Length: 349
Image (cartoon, rainbow, N blue to C red; front, side, top):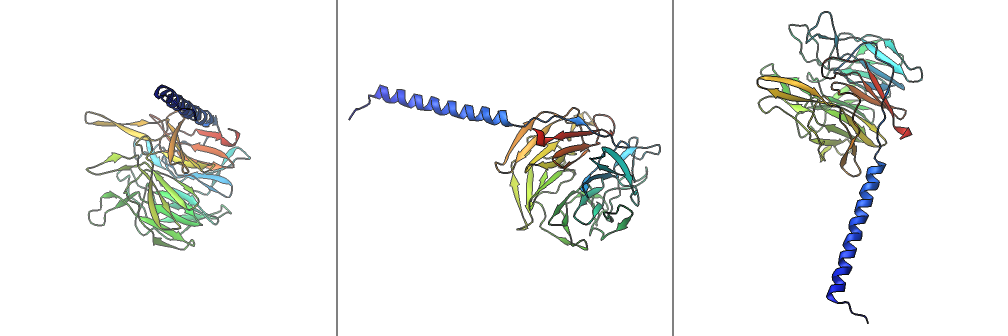
């Protein structure tokens, strides 16, 4: 039997460590090399600039409406709530009008199931009272002829997250009105519209937040970022998911940046989070800074990866995926609402 001297053994161990380090570096380089970089192309522009919107896909079309738009009778910094609704059939590459909403709304939640497109809660009001939170819900069927009233929310809600799991509509968190003071407060409410007929309670999230992003993968609703208000007001990077099959919440890795007004969609079972807003404090003045960041979350690894930035900073925009393409709609940059639409064909990556 051949015996190794201490010197030989140290040399062998050092060689093994160097090999392991080299292998890990190669694997990391390989992972970096296979990270998809998104190429953004301009799509058909919205008919009007819109921000603070929650678009949805219904009947193989993209539907968007409500929100804030530049107005000759503004209620908030040159903007007013809109009642206009628009539909995009990607095959025709142009936006078409669909029936107007029954009344103007901004921060109007939109989500669909197999039967209906829903318009949920949000704010409406005049210049004197811009932020009254609504309970009413409207729905539009696949004939796209007329909005009809649906079961109202149990409480007023706006800036919530909206999701469809198993054809049931979920509304989670957001802002509501205090029954004691009438003031706006953060909500941890979680309501489910069952069989398009009635609302029931589900397990609330662990954090009361609003202006968050959400995405659905299977039975899981992911809630990402957002903010809180009141004395402890802050932007959030925390994220968690609701499992509809177990009526339970679980935390996931936090978003690498704390932001609100961001948007999320799912492509190939990964979540793409885009844009958002943060606040800069300059003395007593607080200003909004829009973000151009793009993050990808992999649920299998519970990790976030940075992707190449958006062509422009955005917040208050909407995002949807349809036929393998990711669409970013409207929103605002540093100054004003936009009608820009950006498209990424992720099946070609």
